[in-house]
Image (cartoon, rainbow, N blue to C red; front, side, top):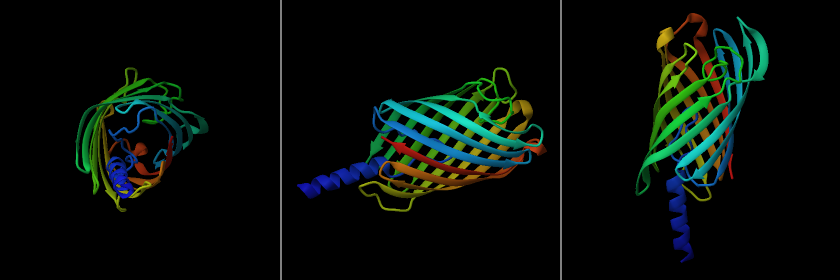
Length: 254
C-alpha cells in the first residue's frame, strides 16, 4: 500500500510539474490555489544604443488554481549614447491571468489562459520597450500550452496598446521545452528551452524576430534560469538594433 501511494504521488507530481515555466515566455498552467511565488528575471541588454540592466521583483499570488494576480516592481540601470547613464525605478506592471480552458490526459495537459498587463508610467521616458517608457500601456493576450512528460509547447499572441505613444505593438511567442531528467519525486528537473519572440511596431515600422536558448534547473520549489537571446531578423532603426540579451532568473514558491 505504501509503495502504491508513493507511485501515485510521484505520477501526479510529475504530471503537474514535468516542466517549469518558460524563461522569456509565459505559461498558462497555474498550480495550487492560495500559493505565492516570488521571482526575478534579471536582463542585461546590449544594443547599438548602449547597455541596459533590468532587475524586477515579481510577486505572484494565485487566488484559485485557475487565476493569478501579480505586481512587478523593477529597477533599471542604463548607459545610453543619447541619454547618458542612471539608475531608477522602471515601469511598474500589474498582471492578471485567467485560465478558461483545460483538457487533461494521461501524462499530458493542454490549457489556454487570458492575460493582461497594465503598465504604470512610473519609469523615466527612456523609450525602452517593456522596461521604461514613462507612459501607460495596456497589454491583452492569449497564452496556450501543451505539456507532456517528454516535451512542452507554449505560445502567446497579444497586442500592447500605448494610448499616448508610438510603441503600440503586436507580439507573438513560441517556445519548446525539453526535460532532460525523468520525472521524479521530490521534484528535480533539468530543462532546455528554445524560445522565439516576434514583435511588430506598426507606427515606427519596426520588426524583430528574436531567439533565446535557455536552461533551467528546478529542485523542489526553487527554480533557476539562464538564457541567451539573439536577433534573427531586425528591421528597426540602426541605433536600436539588439546585439544580445542575457537573462538570469530564480523563483521560489511557498
